[in-house]
Length: 471
Image 1: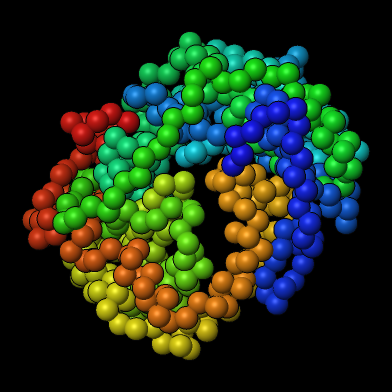
Image 2: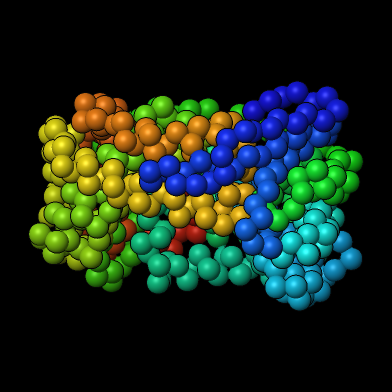
């Protein structure tokens, strides 16, 4: 991304609107404007329906959570909906609902996001509410305490009823440790309990400001008029008080180690086998997407075919790639009956071995290409979807070819390139981090064959092993 901050810089893109290119898409023409205070506007017209989609990002997110206060960015995001400007929480919600609009905030790994949809006739209200949320949030103490306590209760409830969703959270904490990608973006029971209003106000002042802001808007408006509205609303806003921290890359980890989360009485074992993968700007992204599709990215993938269809060991098995600004994780995720824990994990490892060692059949590659190209265009259909895509390109410093050239890259990927990517990205079976959640008494001895075992009770209010650092 450009670091220039003169008066106003406008960059006009000149490609075609979103349209079919075979089975690919291109982004619409858009203008990129950087204001004097560092705010970036990315604006595109789309006149087919009288709607405007907006996606605002505050760069930073969970990676800026202070030590021991993980979840504060996520908590702040929630508070942005709980009253702003002259409207308290009910009045703010009513202002959005009264015009049939939508406006929602979320705290993510590398950004706080606000997404919205409004009728074009209500665009002035949209800008007003967005500016109130970001520049004039109320951050009421009582509302904060309610939201914080509800977040803690959601985590506790998940430990009873949504174990599958928690395993990757434990996984990231075990894989990345004290790295910014380790602590969960939504926090833990321990870290959330430590957040008071004074910490929230301090975090807002340090990490929310004009120099962190990206606003992408797409819809039924005139670009010049929208630029004028947004500049009037945000052009005089202050910068964030703190510098945006840089995130270092983490290398893949050699060898094996195991984290066992003990849930006595569990009838199933949830498992996550992973290592460090690649970042969002990985050059062979298209070939990697094809490889992941074949391995564990669709119902007919190798993992799901072996673990579900052929053996009946699980209702589902998949491979998951997370690709933030620095290398994220590449993981196998599944679950099985307690009695078949070892059989299922051994089978997943065997599939991984065969995937790395065997070539890919040309017919399977053709099938994967059709699947990926079929899944891609629906991500760009609406104004709000386009606004999100434009904002994320700016966030990660990617140019429009990340989207526009994707279909051609998929079509041009061959077996040799895909095989090379598999060897580069998917971990060797000897280099895996294992995270298992189940009844430790029944599986503890058997899983020790995978490597040294660290044990954590599910009642532990943190997601990390205490001596490895707080989350």
